[in-house]
Amino acid sequence: MDFLEDNGEDEVTESSARADGIRIILADSQAIYRVGIRKIFALEDDIRVVAQADTLENLLAAVQRYPTDVVLLEGGILTGSADAIPEILRLAPDAKLILQATPADESNTVELYRRGVRGIISRSISPDLLVKCVRKIVAGETWIDNQSVNWVIEAYRAQAAALVSPRSQPRLSPKELQIITCITQGKRNKEIAYQLGTTEQVIKNHLRKIYDKLGVSDRLELALYCLHHKIIHADSDEVIMS
Amino acid sequence: MRFPLALAVVVSTDEGDFIANTQNVSASGVLFEMEHLIQTGTHVRFSLRMPGSVLGMSHDVLVQCNGRVVRCTLIQKKFHTAATIDDYQFVEQ
Image (cartoon, rainbow over all chains, first blue to last red):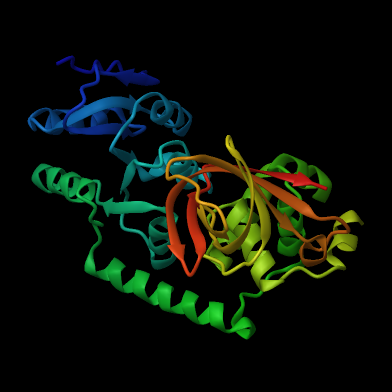
């Protein structure tokens, strides 16, 4: 077996691939965590780290290049990238995501599971528990604590109620409706920012709020939501073009 | 999130084009009802037409989708065909 070399500046490093066992890609901005976690998995015969990445960009490259069963990623890598999780899953639909993060609030936790994360674990998780978590998730289970289970169930109930009751649809601001209309026209964030006279980052922030309000996770789902709920009115176009 | 949208589509495969209606659509997959059997694993292309009137525009928007069939079941003389949506692109009309 080849061992990974951790040079502290690695973009994407790899070990030789084998057909058996659980394949893992580690994505963590801190080399010390990658080294430590790799050593934990090195003790397990059935778990192999096939690649490492220290940024989201490198992770996206890694999942395309190396087939993997699990992506173990640091929550900080996702900061500022609302579409990161759907994008990872689009590129690697069979991969299961485990997020290492500090204890999150309710909306953040629910959103992570909604977007496709299979497990959220603490940065201070014990080695034994980490290995157990990986095996459980590869077996098709979800790793979720009791508090998060309650949050997810409550969110599911709220979403189900919203779907059957148009009156309880989330309230969207005029700016959010403008952005939604642009999205459904297929415009990119940069184009929307230019059209609305703001920055791409502001658009991303609005988009994240829209996704959170509507419970959608990407542009197609947003468009389908609009189609189903008819939340955009004909005069929205006039507002945008002004 | 799965939406119960009934949209008329043409499903294109290497073996031909087939008329279908969507039963429900999500961001990652779609369920068609159609007359023809499409084998599991077949790559499919189809476009979802989103009426401009609903999206606040003067023209319709097409979402061109690529995916593959994961299930095809005969129910009451119609094939219920489930397909993934692996990638998509918005196209203005």
